[in-house]
Image (cartoon, rainbow over all chains, first blue to last red; front, side, top):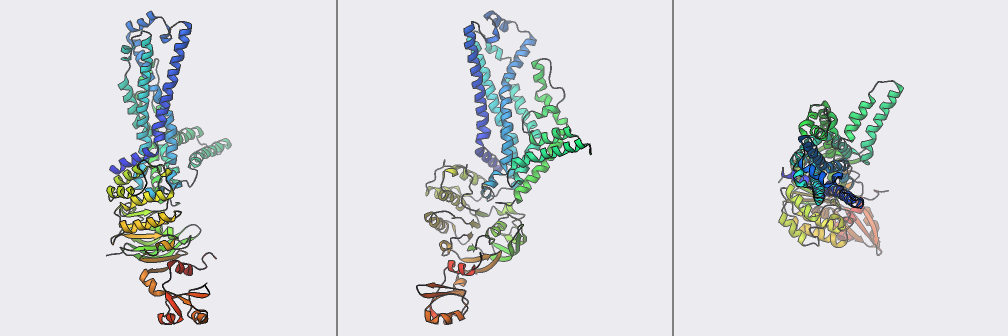
Amino acid sequence: MKTFYWLLKRELWEHRGGFFWAPIITGGVFLLLNLMGIITGEVVGRKHGFNFAFGGTDSNLHLLDRALDKNSMDSVGAGLDMVMYSPTLIIGVVLGFVAFFYCLGALYDDRRDRSLLFWKSLPITDTATVLSKVVTATVVAPLIAVAVGMLTGIVMLLMFAVTLSFHGVGVWHLLLLSHPLQVMANLVGSVPLYLLWALPTVGWLMLCSAWARSKPFLWAVVLPVALGIVIGWFNLLGTIDLQNGWYWRNVVGRVLFSVFPGGWFTEVPHIGGSNPAEVLSTLSVTHTYAALASANVWIGVAAAAAMLAGAIWFRRWRDDS
Amino acid sequence: MSAVITASGLSKRYKSALALDDISFQVEPGRIVGLIGPNGAGKTTALKAILGLTDFTGSLNVLGFDPRRQRDKLMGEVCFIADVAVLPRWIKVRQAVDFVANVHPRFDRKKCEAFLARTKLTPEQRVRQMSKGMIVQLHLALVMAIDARLLILDEPTLGLDILYRKQFYQNLLEDYFDENKTIIVTTHQVEEVEHILTDLMFIRDGRIVLDADMDAVGERFAEVMVGADKVAEARQLKPLDERQVFGKSIFLFDGADRARLEALGEVRRPSVSDLFVATMKGTYA
């Protein structure tokens, strides 16, 4: 257990740039762009002689304070929640790229620079090594991304609140309409879904990473794509009736793109709604865990287990140092 | 005490070539064994088999473990420095010490820090900022702090300057080696290790061509400096090798009669490098 903890720590030491700095910088840039947007709004608004916030006069703004019915209060709350989700959305895309290239290099880079021989001189099983890398990609990295995303979201909310308060809007009690704890619970609660959904991609990339003698990226991408083209070609000839679209969606998509968060939404029935609050509630974990009922998720997990077993075997026996 | 390593019928075939050809040997505890051979002779393959890094046929027992199936347990008792500069380039001195201290049950942190204190390494220094010599200092400090029964060194000083090379072997002898430990070392810089070795193993084309302790080597091989008048007589004794120095001939004999050699001229113990060159004659031809 202690060894595993240090293995995780080791991964974070090595990939601090991808796992810490990439989300932090993304969050920072996100905040900066929003700040620039606010300042632009202020300047333009002043030039044209009206307050940009909520686009109306002071009396209108006070209306907002006074007379919100239940429905619009929900909408305002959902809007604020969306503001809090938005940075995590962007950071999630960054996480996808980081995780993809991390997995691809995880069992290859140390073979290339021969530092593998140092790691192999320590009493650590290859299973523990590979699993520590899987956990880093599927649990530790998304948790860091979520934490940074949440923090950015809250800072952003405060930024808007401060701006509005300059315009005499009593936004602080408006903020009470948002649900930061619920947002946090939804994001953290999605990490297990991410883990299960991302596993086939992680497994495939790590298998290529452990197996390839060179250029793991090429192998990882070219093999499934080439197979897809062959299937497409047979379809064109009409010799066999293979489901081309099915292959691209359920094989290529799952082994290459499942590290990008949110893919599991495709397995959740009835996403969406007529107003923001409804949409958000269909995206909450209480609803999205319905994805666990789909065979797609579990077939992916089983395939991942097989591919990771392969990766461990190659890690143990690949002899090219 | 039982042998540290027992190998019998060890073979390893790569696609194109036979790297190990049915070799058998034993290494006793408390020895420093020099495994010496030309490039491509199979030294590294033999070490990799011992460390469980490669598959092979035949039987091999290292400290009671089968390196193929019990590698994880074996690595608790064995250390190796595979080469200079295999430490990951991103790691800091502090991180390397922390990591090994927490995953290796036989690591003594105080010892390691004492070794590091004698170098110029600083805790926040990264491997990528170090010279080759400093990387080896760090690696050696880590390894010497591990109370392992077997230490394997594969060309540990390749590419280092003479100061680092001398210091490396000196540290190893003074601060690490004792009768409970065994060291196997491969190197091309034979002159630098020959006075610390207790055993000598020559390997050529995947076979062991010489396996003896240094005392036996001294008894078996002899070098004689012969004047021009006795050269013909010396050649009749079938020397392994002959070379000319300052108008005299130096002959190297294997198992020749001492008394007859004394009559030819001054008898000396041959250096390991001369012995090596004579044994490996024609390897690259």
